[in-house]
Image (cartoon, rainbow, N blue to C red; front, top):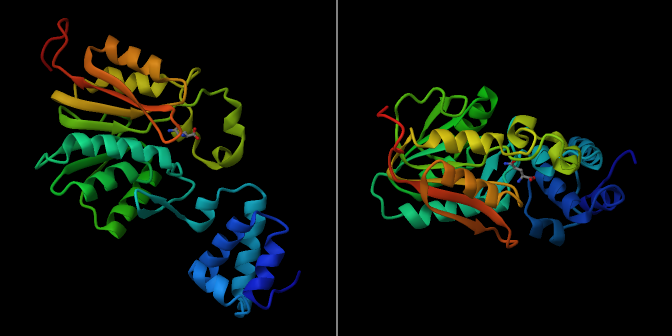
Amino acid sequence: MSAASDLAGALAWARKHIVPSEARLLLRHVHRCQAAQLAAWPEEALPAVEWETFRRLVERREAGEPLAYLTGLREFYGRDFLVTPAVLIPRPETELLIDLALSRFSEEPRLKALDLGTGSGVLAITLALELDCAEITALDQSNEALEVAKSNAARLGANLAFLRSDWYAALGGERYQLIVANPPYIAEGDPHLAMGDLRFEPRAALAAGENGLASLAHIISGAGRHLEDGGWLLMEHGYDQSAAVRGLLADAAFTDIASWPDLAGIDRVSGGRWAGMPREEGAG
Ligand code: GLN
């Protein structure tokens, strides 16, 4: 098809290639309009440049590229975040981490919190926006990811600190009341990595060692050096990892260890409280 003269024609063409809801979303993105406008004025003209842009996006979607990378946006906790292929696409189940953090710290006047592997910044920025006066540090080992997170903070008006760091490596002796993380947790050999959106997402944000637990284990073993006594560590993990993660937390002498289910009823976040230095370690 060489050109679509109106919105309805463009949608009719696109529906032969991708599902209708995604066609509408891409057309709204290109034509910068609301869903109601598409429905009410299907005969509205589609300028030739927009048609070209739309056609290319539909072809890329048909080839498997994630919708969020095509539109450059994904909603999380009621706000739109910029996303690029340098960052994991935010998932709805990750909102559970925010709910758990807010239920523990919404009365805390100046929460000091750390987001490990912030990616697009959804966790750190949402906490900063939901909790007035919180002091949030967002770190990532990827400069490209930090650039995306900084853009999101600026767009959404969130005030937080950013740090380039391989997990705790650049943190010095800082301690926090809360550490959150949505680390990579898929096993390197998992066939899902070659399917769907995951094919296009940064491997470093998805896969962690032979059983997917490498980053979670690293985060848990180092958390005691960066949590205040009584501070919480809350981590997202894979659908079958909650018992293993609780085991790692117990080995590291955490208390109040628990797992919480996501909207699908699957244990998706586990965490615990840091009770203080374990017996065998000295200060520091
Ligand atoms: N939840 C993502 C998925 O399984 C993975 C995200 C992650 O590894 N943190 O698709």
